[in-house]
Image 1 (cartoon, rainbow, N blue to C red):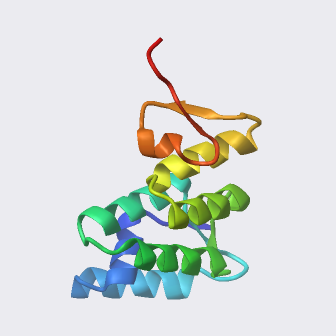
Image 2 (cartoon, rainbow, N blue to C red; image 1 turned 180 degrees about the vertical axis):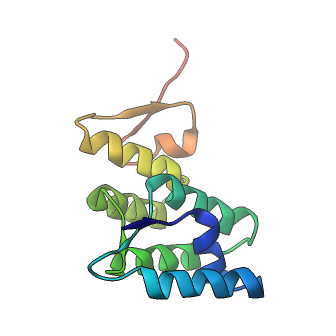
Length: 134
């Protein structure tokens, strides 16, 4: 198994740098297989969403489609899969950032009832709670 960094995935999806995109595509298409998938860490997923939002200004619907494609591709491994899917579903339909949704769903999968935050958007999520001054 090999690990894939954010910049490899960006070049693979965006194809905006001829030389790097060619290398990233060759790497993914030759080294990531069903039996030896490329590992995409949770940090890479969060960075990928951030890059697509900030640097490329992709709309949320396109980002969600790209993430769904990653989750359905047998040549990639993302663990733990269930909290990631739940976070993507919540991100798709809500206002919280993907990373905030993922944090809450990972915490919930680890046994937390809620995740406290000062972020009002994140607090409106399924497992989010706003911490307020008394």
